[in-house]
Amino acid sequence: MIRINVAPPPEARARRKRFEFRLPAFNLGILFGILYVIAVAGIGWYWWTESEEAARLDREVTRAQQELAALKTTIGQGAKVKELLPELQKRVKAIQELTKDQARPIRLLDAFVEVVPRELWITGFEEKGTVLRITGSAFTTTAVSDFMSNLKASGKFKDVDIVVSRQDLAKPPRLVTFEVTCRFES
Image (cartoon, rainbow, N blue to C red; front, side, top):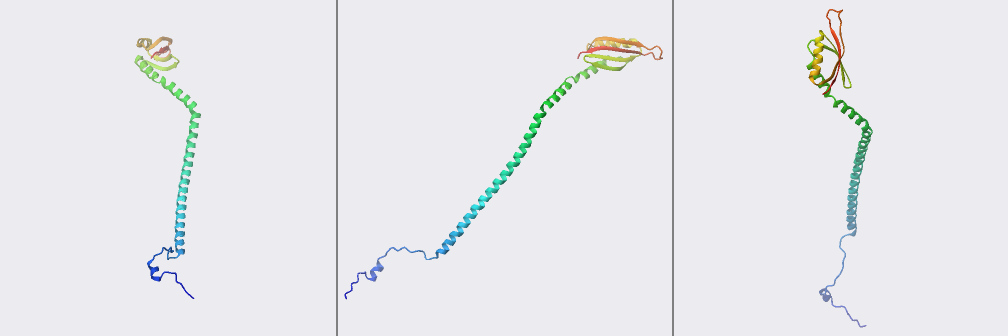
């Protein structure tokens, strides 16, 4: 039998380097274990961030609902104000009418005090519309006459007329009672 060795000698094989693909020398179970731990940590981190986002959104929804309830209360109060507006406008008109002529009584009394003589007492003072009705007493008819002259001379009292003037002769202090009407023009 004849044998032919076609293979290169072992030295030549060592000289020639071939490319060989080799797997790492460590255990693949460890690699997959590490990948599993990384995947679990990533999923845990993702779950934690999503749960934090959900909690934040829940807080915002709760705050928005509270704000909505407060705004509904405010709107309800606004509706009540709108319902009360006509009544409040009537009140404002009434106050304006009352305050419009508020200074008139003060001017009237200031003008009236200046014209009353010392011997005369005013017992009644009534204003109906523009007409003043003044009642009083005096020791003499001259004091009543002076009073009427002072009213006319002041320029603030118009249409001065005496309605009644009486003197009671039966009583010892003979007082004259009178009633005068006039108009006050401010």
